[in-house]
Image (cartoon, rainbow, N blue to C red; front, side, top):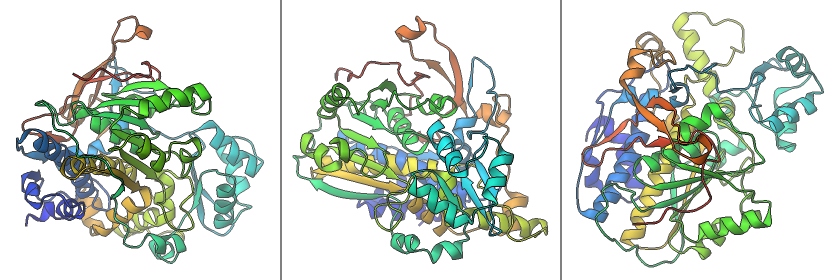
Length: 494
């Protein structure tokens, strides 16, 4: 067995897909270190991206009988794991390459530890400030947090549905009740949730997901990356967001590529009615609402499977479906902090530099939002594997992915020697299209022509998809660049 394909083959087999198909996945033989981290992030990147591409190819094969090879370059893949910082519009660099609000980040606490707070959404920022009763400056937040023990603040933030986690080592996380609940949880799961006839195979689609409709209700990286991947393989992805939440242009522009975007208020009866009509005609329901959030509105997995037999219902959560933290809100940076990554990365870097410093070491984040991106491709992989099941055996299917379980999987890949990781691992390129490596992996994407831009299309350059399919190459498509560019309607199927 090809060693580079071993992680992919294990996950492919876990979803009961035909083993012989993995031989058509070509991966860089020795991917790590392709980036400066003690974790095998290149393996994680090319494996997750490769699985999403291979599942698309397999679905296409079931529909047409045509086989094809899927190849993924490790360096391209690991750079794509930070795609949100590498695009430019009309040749203009972004004002900042940071995806975080100015208050977000790590702070010292009274018990000589750290907490990380996430404040990108205004209501999350205000919620943290309400707890701390301080001014909205980093200095004031730091002073206030020195009056809190790290776990106490984490607990208080969670009780108010805010986003903060205490820094833990792997050892501390492994002893935590929630870590124990996650033991042996795979990064992607398929569950049959209803009966339905086998999907009919019609026509000769030229792209793997041609004719497949995807209703996407996600925000912030992992879910949007999954939707973007499905769109690249030909799906009609209708990305629905709430008009009551602010846009996050730094992220939304990049992850909107290939999709159509619209907004509906699911708290409004008319919005729910319109949404229900869309559900009845979709093939895939992709959501990352807080646990139970959509069920309370009548769109949980059971209700949707009943309304649309044969559906693939894909869900993303931060911490999974079991254990004491299953209902907690979370983002990649918070899960990294809580589950030990930031301590392990800091300790490995200190070992490399010989500068161990004071304990605890200042947390060191991974060089990209690796949990988010890997989870996005795992979602796309699982969705397409479930679509394959609808052809081979019928039924309605649920796909489950959590950031914590994906982090657990990346950790299972093992770590590099610190010298190899930080001496031989190349830093990610400068976030500029003038960087030769970025330019090499980028393509031109035009703004979607809509009534709001009067037919004038801005030109964007963004990273190409790293999965290369030999017979049905991805189409980079257009980008709406706004969250409300289209009407909430499906395209007519040919």
